[in-house]
Amino acid sequence: PRPHPTLRVRPLTCTETRRGDQQVVHSLGDGAVHVSAARHDATFGFSAVFDAGASQEAVFEGSGMRQLVELAMDGFSCTVFAFGQTGSGKTYTLMGPLGQSDTQPASPALLGLMQRSFTCLLEQSRSRASDLALSASYLEIYNEQVRDLLSPGPPCALPLRWSKSRGFYVENQLSVEFESLEAIVSLLLQGSQRRRTSAHALNRHSSRSHALLTIHVRSRAVSAIPLLGRAGGLRAQRGGANSPTVASACPSKQGTLCFVDLAGSERVKETGSSGELSVEANSINRSLLALGHCISLLAKPRGKRTHIPYRDSKLTRLLARSLGGSGITLMVACISPSSRCLSETLSTLHYASRARRVTTRP
Ligand code: ADP
Ligand code: MG
Image (cartoon, protein in one colour):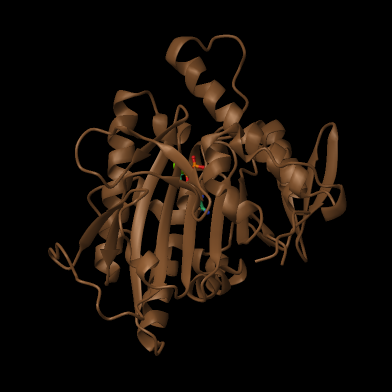
């Protein structure tokens, strides 16, 4: 199957409306979207286009997200990634407005793809005959360093390794088991909070880092596994290279569902960025370029394909499995309809159309 490039156009914000920004993006129906401005006139095709009026539920149901959840339960590596410039609606699409307010829980209608997927996953897992174990890990890549967003304490960099059996993996990443919606939503909140807290210290780094939340789904076929360290319904486990994991004890199906909130793709002005800012900008550019590069190589016909340089960035290493051989990827390109964002919007649309041609063999 091909990845499903899905486009979401957010509504104009109050600020954009107030200052009289023109709306330059128009949905034509049937997956077509038209961009028209003074010197630009282009149409792009997607599997699905969601415009300003689309609800969070419509995006969940219409993007193929529900099928992706089911595939993960069947043992596939599934990834959904949101990309686009800062402020284009990536976090909103994935998590709803929870990213912004600490105090009030988001209204159920505004919950994003993540919470909806968790609900679907838990409902399905209860209705299926086989017993499924669910666990989550949450990482961010900031300045080419992988950090654990679930580990307590100050963020520290974790090594990214490769092994024949596992492919690329993060050593010592925390993986926390959960059995309820409350538990996984609270892990999501904790992790996002950690990402944001350090964002205040390190100028707006939340849009300067890639965040990856992975749900591991495995069949609990073997009953002899000791349940260690049970605490409040959560079991935490560190997966090192040699640590005996339940997965290695039991050869049954193991699927993953990974949600990737990519750092803002906006071009960083050559002038004016210095020091820390330019280091950040370089890492983001490097990893998004590496991702784009892998995607365009993967888009070539199988026979003409050369070596795919997954090793060029941490991001592409972590996404190697889902992009390349055996994964299924849902991409959600996010754009603003405002004339002021035109050049970034066009670059997101081009990026997304390249990715459209990638095929995988799960
Ligand atoms: P990003 O993560 O791409 O930087 P955000 O998700 O934080 O962008 O969105 C930027 C702003 O636009 C936020 O205030 C968010 O609430 C708002 N927004 C984004 N998408 C939508 C939407 N579909 N409907 C309403 N508001 C939205
Ligand atoms: Mg964001």
